[in-house]
Length: 313
Image (tube, rainbow, N blue to C red; front, top):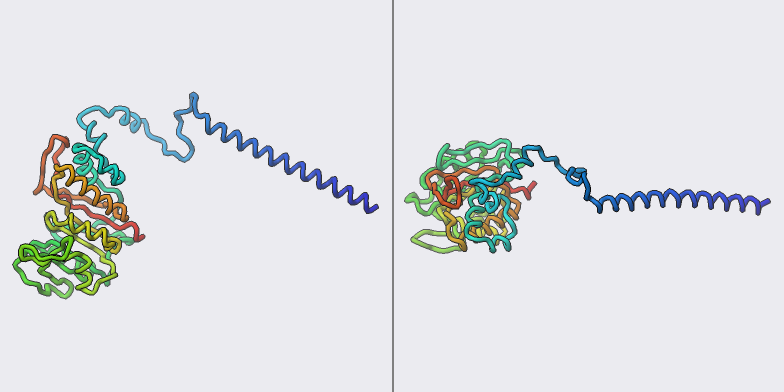
């Protein structure tokens, strides 16, 4: 009797194992067919979008097929997303010019609420007031380049209750405490610590050390220093100080009509992008307007670019 029970159990086991194998092989064959189907995409249905891919409208498809016209070269050479630095280094003069004036003039993220601190014209700047980026007291703001216009600094101190450090070596005004939250320093930003043209110039790292801000976050860093931003930015990026900045406002100066110079500027902007900074607003300063046969519409030599640091989210 026990042997009959063992035989019955054995037969049940064989049956269950057989059923399991049949199910497994069925699923395996289905998977093989799916793989086969994915490898063979030719045929009348090849043009249909695959699952998960966005469907382009008829108008988009029509526009992509019709690229000829006055803007053809700009669309082909003027990149709004910067390539890797190795590719930037190989650009031709026309490619680098068109890419510089295309990339710097287009945003790549959205700030839902922008608030302008200071004048509506030259001297005012936008701050992103979205909750994930806005300055919250106690907050620190560095403002390089004043030219006797404290409207941005005063508004930021008043509305965000931040401690604002204002810097400009070109002003006749000596260093002083302008208000309870705004202090002016007759010193300027540069790529190295030095004295030039009777001006005291320092790196951002040195200024933070002088003001006991080493290791602290700068909530808003504003730089408008007439071409000196380029050597200063190289130092700021290489030192790692940029990672401690929440919002970065800068006026980029330069026509970008020299190949090597423009490649260097694009490379610096690529470093800033790779550090997590995304443009939420750009203003073209009309005091620096230029025309060039490589670009079909008027450009400027002074772009006021506003970034947020997405790496801090």
